[in-house]
Image (cartoon, rainbow, N blue to C red; front, side, top):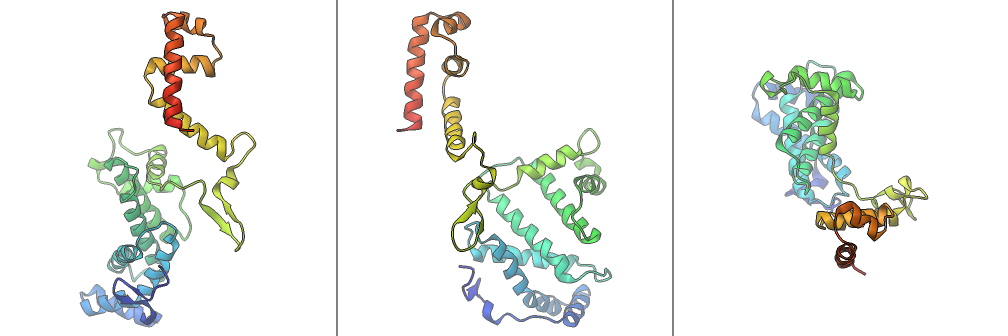
Length: 271
């Protein structure tokens, strides 16, 4: 899909490329409100947008949608770029485009995150991108935290006065896209290497991981007493009589509840 000639009605095979001098000239004119210069900058950097969205070709998203979102990032970069700084426009624009695409993907993620946490994460990501350009390297979490606290209005800060490093890390983790254990991380044309291969050990392989996840989900759907009985019986090795004494019911009741809980688990886990 990413190799098709036309995307969002734009013939990608005919996209032009601006020289450094042309970019600078159009940027200067755009800053004065010249709409034609701004449009020329957008058209002359669509190849940049196209190259960035190809990094997300494993997400299964519609490339037309990603291209449009990437163009929004490009326009933000054009409007916010400081021509007085000794930085190439592409160096500034690429993180802006990537950030816009990532925000789009997070907002469309099936995992729901609270608005306050998501807003904090977006602010932290924005400060990270800005610091990366100004510092010429990846900023540390401490630097990102300090920048967020420094640039947020007082009413947006927590009651304690400032966000902590832990707050920033938790917010950034909350908006990360879930990754499949079977997503390939490397392929040389033959067998692919998957994430599961990188985290494999003898005690925790793909079978035990998925089985444990399924079992925990099934257990969570049981009534509290049923779950307590199975936990005591099969995870702590208690006899039915010991369970009966601990919970305060008869051994016959424990046997009946245990049998019913096991039947429920079998139905949920399947054959």
